[in-house]
Amino acid sequence: MSGFDDRERAEEAKFALDANMEFKIMARRNKLLGLWAADLMDIHGDEAEAYAKTVVLSDLEEAGDDDVFRKVRGDFDAKNIDRTDTQIRDQMAELLPIARDQVMSEL
Image 1 (cartoon, rainbow, N blue to C red):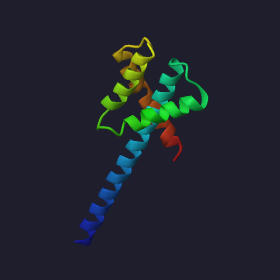
Image 2: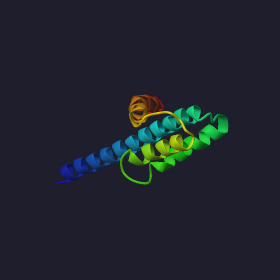
Image 3: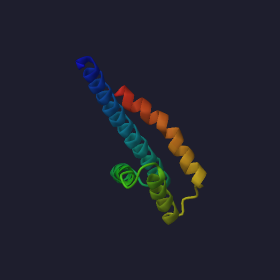
């Protein structure tokens, strides 16, 4: 029985590690998205970093990407930044493998 228990614990640990890694990757993607959006809104330096942090925090509102998308879309609308919904979502998709590479290279 202990072999089964050991395997079960190993699977649970792997699941937790994978979930943690995915969280870090998404947080990095959202930070990169925030920096991209900040640049388009002519926000730079420490203010850009602070804005990017608000984008990261917006992802904690609900599961999925919609909360992050709404944050950036709303900020673009408020600043009259001419980007379509598709362009924002495409940027999110393009930044995901970059974020994954960055996080993995830090291990």
